[in-house]
Length: 151
Image (cartoon, rainbow, N blue to C red; front, side, top):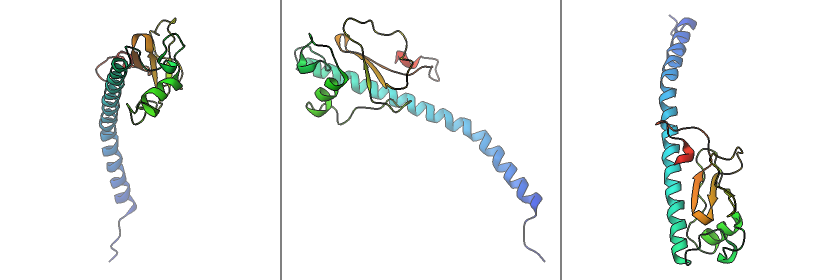
């Protein structure tokens, strides 16, 4: 007497496992999206609080201006130096959880803040020091229908 499975029995088991996987994957995808949304909101909260604390401790000058001089053009490098390297306000720059980028698109003082995210995947964040506004650089809406850019 042989104690092996037949090809039909193996195919039935594989088909059942495939059906179960197809049913559960969308559920896990929603959980992944929810986790990214929560991480994005938390990273924005951390960045916004850090910017406010820095400005409060530097006579109202937000991070981004070289040598804390608002008459100079703000730069990403100056932001990083002020908050992470010299200031130790952050251990590292938080990542945009959707694209994994930490780079800031710096909006100069004489420019309007963009009404939509940058159409490039280079930046994780969009920041205007003059108004202390920082936003997530990501298109689309969350599971509740809120645009990620409006977080």
